Image (cartoon, rainbow, N blue to C red):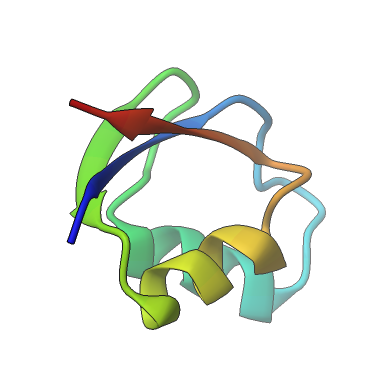
Length: 60
């Protein structure tokens, strides 16, 4: 399994509760915050759900 770096690039203000909870589940609270996760199907699904609010890249 590889790693993925997820960075929040847009605010969660005005978004649905579901999207806010997804960001929280990923561990993101502030714009510019970076978290690292394993690239499991669960994490990739969460990233895909809020892809307009985050940027993701493979980590080495």
